[in-house]
Length: 222
Ligand SMILES: Nc1nc2c(ncn2[C@@H]2O[C@H](COP(=O)(O)OP(=O)(O)OP(=O)(O)O)[C@@H](O)[C@H]2O)c(=O)[nH]1
Ligand SMILES: [Mg+2]
Image (cartoon, rainbow, N blue to C red; front, side, top):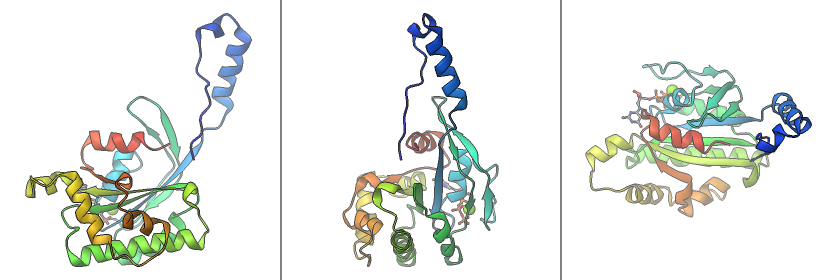
């Protein structure tokens, strides 16, 4: 999914203007690569808050989401670099929205699955997470999307509140609790394999209302 080309202007370009001209032309003519992001996950976990942080949504409705259009937008990182994000939809977290995974999980997209860290030990809550992850796997299988065509991360939001409730519990401990709850996930798909394999690289505890955590998320989007 990564793509880079060194169009940066160097000192010697000023001594060889044709090369400078060529680079300027390439900068303006080359279409910017667009990236698709899907934000899936539990009700009230922070999906719309994440879209707002990334720059795709102006306001987060207090009543929750009922299918909001996210127009294509330019995501700007702290260092000024940017990436165009394709038009998509912001979905709610109830079961009735899971059918939209079929259109949102595509080849060459990056999927964020958001769950509230303060709720992951509740039986109904972690059962629904397992079921959602299985659904992502079934879409990957149905569309024959291979791991190299797909980016995936689980965001455990409300980490600030989790920390207030359980100050002695480290992020590593929280990840262990999460993976324990996912251990019996019944699927042989890619995502289920990652959670069963306890891959900590796919999980991050965050406060989605705070800029530093949003910046980290923005910086890893390529
Ligand atoms: N403290 C804290 N609050 C958060 C965090 N993420 C989201 N919130 C708050 O949680 C509430 C719900 O956030 P939303 O972004 O609407 O959640 P959602 O997943 O879009 O909800 P639905 O669309 O109903 O599924 C809002 O009041 C957010 O400000 C977080 O990491 N920490
Ligand atoms: Mg929402």
